[in-house]
Image 1 (tube, rainbow, N blue to C red):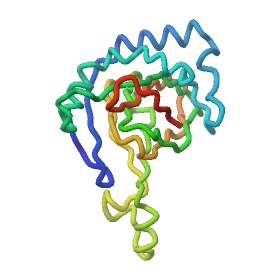
Image 2 (image 1 turned 90 degrees about the vertical axis):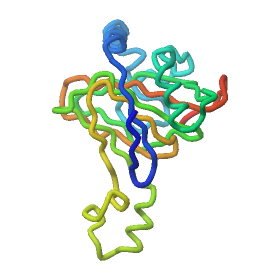
Image 3 (image 1 turned 120 degrees about the vertical axis):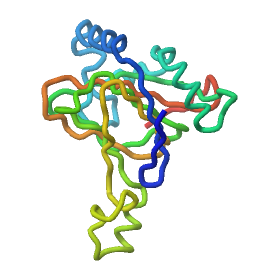
Length: 201
């Protein structure tokens, strides 16, 4: 685990070999063709192809059992109550994006970069929740050049197989991809009450 701060907010990093999930994702993408990853759900203003409509099946949770045990320890919950309660695959290719959003009312959320080429794919862009305050107070400064606390956004350095876990209220987005090579992520939401039915978006 690597713990770091962005805008003064904690983010946790882990790694899980993505090979098995890559095979599942590629098979689904091929078998279903345009379904169930043909378009975003109602209310999403983006072009990502996703299985979010099936997220409550939570069919990927078991892949992350060891990660969640470690995460529970890392945030001071040795009782292991942290629980993935929904999970889904997202597919991006040339021009596809996801708008700025959060995962409230979740507790923490995670993104596993199942298929990701750092040479051609764009990472997730995180938005500084305090930027409006800084920009008002320091109108004469170039905030992007000041520090990690005042910059408007941040792109984590990502390699394939990386997992990042962050507070669900932290807004983020995926810019339009400029390559036809698939970018595949597996997203999940975490709470501390097993069996909770809390929703995202």
